[in-house]
Amino acid sequence: MKPILVFQTDFTYKEGAVCAMYGVVKSVDRELEIIDGTHEIPQYDTWSASYRLYQSMKFWPEGTVFVSVVDPGVGTPRKASVAKTKDGYYVVSPDNGSLTHLMNWVGISEIREIDETVNRLKGKNTEGVSIFHGRDLFAYCAAKLASGKITFEEVGSEYPIKDIMLHPVFEPVFGKGLMRGIFEINDPNFGNLWTNIPLSMFLKSGFAYGDHPTLTIRHDGEVVFEQKVLFHQSFGFAEKGEVIIYNNELMKVAVAVNQGSFSETYNLKHGPEWQVEIKKY
Image (cartoon, one colour):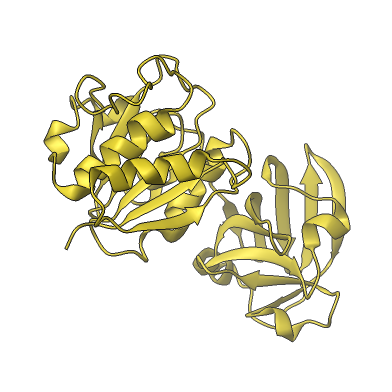
């Protein structure tokens, strides 16, 4: 069976960019199956692109080809690449930080720069276009790879894994009854905020379901939220409108308001400047 193609972008569906990419894929091979990951990644946010790849990739069949196009440097000398992960997936993406989480948490075994002389869309009056590599380069090369028209080695020249562009990754710190981390990403539909604290580390520090530890949130060092909060397995253990610390789908500690938006209610966001401290005592 041919690999599935999974696309994620910051394009939205407000105009025809996504449609054009899919048309290119089907022009290469009508049998290829295309699935949407998300087209709602915040504009130019390569950190979020990186996190969303990690979030969903392992739930797809091995060999799936992911196409990630969040590309503020499109048309500049940044590399257009295809990476192979250590667990057997392919990612077609600009090398601009979008591979950070896969590199750190999964591992990349090989990366190649797309050879535009053979793996770029020709004809259709696209040769002079520098702003739509999602269509002319990434979708086209991914389709050729998934269809078997080229091998991974024929994508282009291999380059050192150590040269992959990466964002800084922040590690949590812990002690007895104490955890410190950051809000790493959000759940934009529900307003939950996900930390970089693994549940295993949290439990090892002495926290248990049913506890009411003190949650302190700082923005650039200034306290913007502080109160005792229930820690439990799921939202329903809290009253409607109550803040809860819970174990999210990636086995990390997260914060929500039951049937509400934690981020909107308290005007909180994610990123390294949003520090999280949880104390049991």
